[in-house]
Length: 256
Image (tube, rainbow, N blue to C red):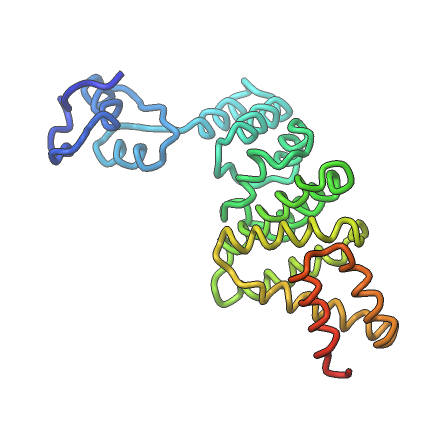
């Protein structure tokens, strides 16, 4: 419960509202340890000599102390993850358990996937995103869009500008070459990618580069005429802007 004034930290008030600091103030006054999941507040507490820890540290201590089994640890972390406890370190097993509990709907786990901390292992994170989308593309295609949107935004945020375009092109290429890509699924895939671009104010240059690469591979395999027909058939149900992009790629191919 907040108090009307700070008793142990008067120097931190600065004339502003101090309700958010009263837990630290109380802990310092009574020599207590602060359990808090706000990293900024924990840092302030430690700067004032107050020991502080978060829920993840508590779970880890319980695991190492034998109070939780590894399976119980996974279940507890998955529950936190699917209830919007963000920035839990990425683990394919953990994210899979949480997403499965949500019926593979792009809920809290997708929010975590959209944050840069989920991309410490880009290969594992991208494979998780593709697997998540593949599970719902037939039954809940809008959920697949949301998974891909979150993944695109997360990878963008996690990548340095010098490598960003290339990494997003590679990810877009991975999506386009999935076995579940078809004329009926592609509109949802493209919608997800465009939503991801909008979320980070990115251009569609990486996607266009991936589509150019994709068409080039089709040409190498089928020849121009058949490749052009195949690409336009794939885009048959896409919106007009995406169809125009596909047509432009066909017409401007260097070997055309």
